[in-house]
Length: 216
Length: 216
DNA sequence: GTTTGTGAAGGCTTTCACAGCC
DNA sequence: GGCTGTGAAAGCCTTCACAAAC
Image (tube, rainbow over all chains, first blue to last red; front, top):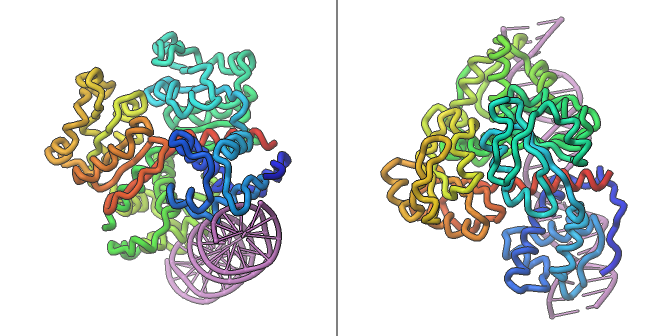
């Protein structure tokens, strides 16, 4: 077990590797629940349908976390992955779009779990403002985005508006000083320099299933 | 404009290509809204931040839909993509897990839009059974899954339970005769021969953003 | 003995660039 | 003139296989 490389050439790490680190983190959680404290890359791969060389390679970008002849300490590795992903600090989110999806995400466990904290849910529809959400937040006016981002030190914006509003909301988010956007609207948001945008289109996944059902 | 290849070697088409077809479909919808009836792959690429050669190559797996020197007819291409993805027939879904996410997906537009139809939402918690959802469905007993799938001719199951229940639910779905599963539980569901499973872990996407925020 | 970390190989995906067609 | 469809090239990602470490 040696050093954890804190200074990573960000651009050298692929998104696929980063996504798998999240998966490995889920695996570590599960192993600890099962009382397993040490595991080899091969055993991890067998158990979760992964490839052992890929696990080792993904981790090796960030340091040498294993012991040859032994494997990885689950508890230690979990902590390293948390640090690598930046999950050891609080990340504040604001959701714009208080429809069903936005409201649901307010206390979706994958969001409120970890150190992600939803500190506001906004909508531009006056009839929705003031509505309570299951998580206990009240819906606020989307016009107050800039103010809310600054006062509550928000980093990440989540877009759950209809597609037609998403581009404008993303520009307001960039102007408000948010650093990253998770966009659930089925549209590719464009041209915001300096703000990181990730689009997740739930419909695409269903349509992929439809394709495979159609073509035997 | 020539033939649409109806008999596709399914295994030769990558998931990445299929996912992009969904994206192209969104683009066609948008272009028609804007009144654009013909577009070249280059113009499409410029407008939606795609690569023109990739668009042409993706489409060429399925037929020759363009006219050299002119481009693609938007309305026709849209219809071809709908047929390729199998979106021209009704696909019935059942959701298991009537928490916030499951309830929200009941009438999420990306789901209820197209020809996807949610025909049931189930939960194993007796206190939830009978609850109304925003879409007008009542929550039913998860024990009735097999019966509901058969009676209502359901093809696709959506898992929105906690991670701890997901494996068991996926096995019940396979036993009930469902052909595909969209799994939102943060766990990789294993070992169901003959049923197609796609896992979408919303937490992974947030953690990816966290990684990039952490490493400059 | 076992397992990691890693160069090399193999496979897959994207992009280039142009012949063929309008 | 313009644009598609596509082989070839480049780039990227995964997997193999083994030296180094325990």
